[in-house]
Image (cartoon, rainbow over all chains, first blue to last red; front, top):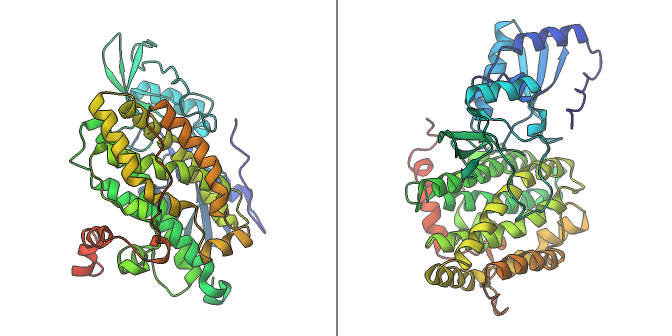
Length: 175
Length: 256
């Protein structure tokens, strides 16, 4: 699945201005996984500008993720530092964020950072006892890996260990 | 939205029912932090709690906007009295042992997942969007929760006994999940939410499947407790609120 096209601004959109705003945000990273930019995560859904006001639509990853507020503050700050007097953030719930929106570049950055990237397709509806996915070790690429916990240090990760190189690692779980 | 945009305060009340279930269960799960039997399960319960509190925040934000009296999500969470909470009795039941907590979690989440599937089709666009998001989180929880019901139920003699005891003890709180009060009737009539009795059959199917796998006997349907959705709570609720609200009551407006 690919991310739907970004929505365009309503009424008097200036796409050059929006591209400019997106360029300001390109360096902002996720506070908990700093190797990923917000762009890599696919959470910046759209930019709208009208006069002095700029609104950025951000999709939260998990409803309770504490990073959401830090991310919103960093976007607001970036807008202010470029002279936007009325920066606005809108939480975009629909369509809900999915790990399918993490870019190919984001996936390779995750693996290089030691976090196994999410499997491509998101899970089926009510498969309570479906067999677990095969997750490769981000260090040695072995598929002889063991799930230690379906949960981890942040809402978006699960804990694994490798049966070959014996290293523990985290897996960016699929939602 | 102004108060007049919500005649009879029905949308507000419905959002509170949903938000209070999430908040109170999140608070209960949070009580495990520092006490779980092993680190991995502590992480799991803390992650569950975090998701529920996030859901409660989103629902209270909508509720506060709907009410239109300038209350915030925090006011709704921390500054109401017991009788003003609208959660079902099941979620306020004490944690007990690990099997009790997992049994409570399973009985509730199997219901919540089915409720969310219906809410994802709500005529209320904001609620539908939120439900679409939340059901992805609960689907992930439910897999873990159901696996634990099976692992304990079909485990050792002691773990089986504890899981059976937990399911037996909590069963009387499941009837309330499928009973409708005035707010539920409003929601069903306006296609905002499902009629609770309509969720019973899919819940039975799901629960029976897991209990069978877990070798746990389904309790006989007997007398069912109710009242939580109308503000009549068990004595446990006051203790939970005392713990949860203490800081905001003692130091109003405190932040850190």
